Length: 155
Image 1 (cartoon, rainbow, N blue to C red):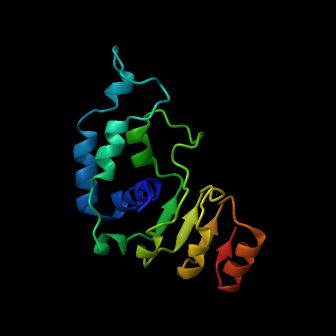
Image 2 (image 1 turned 180 degrees about the vertical axis):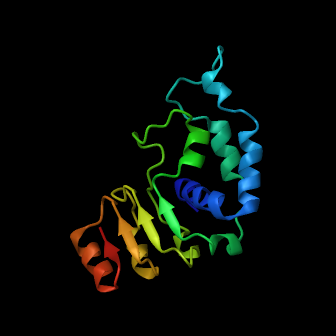
Image 3 (image 1 turned 45 degrees about the vertical axis):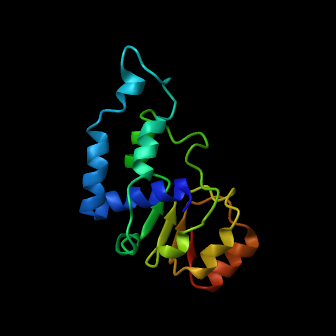
């Protein structure tokens, strides 16, 4: 599974799965943000904290947990702020480039606030039961037409 896709999945599961919330809480309790905020900071203000990203990506996600995911949102604040405490929504650090593994999100209903322009296998969206795509960039007119024909609301 693509790292940035997994971060989005963890962001949704943080809100719906106690096990993931607990694991993310353990990472948060490590105060890794001090690597940016302390007087002797290891990283600059807008840097990512690779230690936080590595720990988040090490969280196991079961197929039952994947089935809980209904939303992938670019406003995945919990995971993004753990990795980049001063994340402002700009930059490409969290952009999706691949949908490998998205087929495991059997109950995915909505994509919102995502830049999909760099996703190399974006046609995988056609094989999902998505109901809504909201404020997403990067859908080609042809793919948008095909999704609308499947009943996907695109706003």
